Length: 473
Image (cartoon, rainbow, N blue to C red; front, side):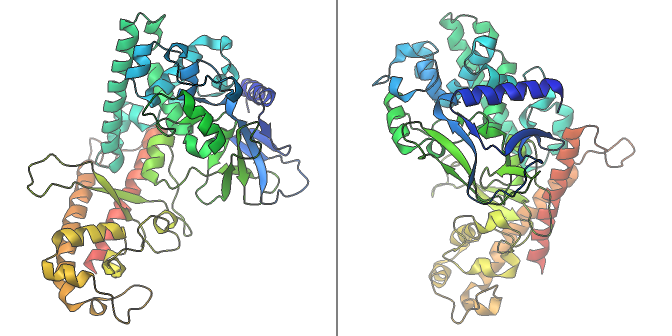
């Protein structure tokens, strides 16, 4: 770790401890070549940390969220006002009443950044990737156009367009209100700083309902405006957020250790040896989701993969005259949904579909709820009745066409045709948008963003190919 980085981290740890945070005596912050700032068991430790140890404790007063904007300072429960008070907020009343809570939280982070050393959170903010170091914090939505081109045709590329439009709209609306209200130094709230704050919250924040104890939530709800829920915004957890993501790490977040001093503890349920990196777990996120928020993907191994393509299906009303409803995501998996390495897939809700069609090998790579949804949309009244019948003497694993109701064979074929057409369209789109050099050869990545995009793009192709091959068997 560079001397300057060590100084910033030492200041963060000291500030956090002075305000009630705790780091396990055998845990330290260090710099990993791949994961950057990370937590690990000190190499000098003389014994293994057994499951159940508390790695880090983050007290509520050190956190940053929309709650702080409501009172313009740290959250200290015994000093909270008894009701929502618009005049106590960090921004003008009209701004607080008109702007969504999650956007206000980002603007509050900007305001504290602009205070510099005068901010209560100065040591924490100094430990974050800094706005001027653009490449250290920019997720794909803020990549240069040349890098974004490597994602064209993928799920992520579509989502990036939505994110970019939303960020632009949020910033424009919020800063317009600050300007109209002659808020001091409103010009300093730039688009660059908003992009930075967006990225910090996207990559580091947590849901308050998971991080704040029920009793503390009850008190915090007093200052929320009418109609605002505890999860209408997210919360930054200094020091706690240094723990990196591992999809397989076992953990718990404990919020009730001391009701008098509300905090969140990262309890590690795995054993860690001296020198081991200590991981948190951000939950069930596909590589597409990890890429968009955290700028990394998990590599494919024999024992674990995290490669899924998101399929959007738009519902129309019966008459077909209304605009499409909000898209629903279904997953297509690199390996069968019930494969031991398809960890995220096996944990998805709805794995026990009302229909047994998903147990057919040709549908093994598709989310069961997608197969059921298509079956409902494509079935005749007779087939609908057959769908509700149990499969007699069916084995527990995959099944064959001979095992399902004899009246469903044509329905299976119709579902197969729809899925095949969609997969081939998406695969062709990836092929057509591949970046090539002037001589027609595949373009070589010129930086880390492009390398990451190519790796993700390659896995998307593998998912689509695997699903198409299953359908063609």
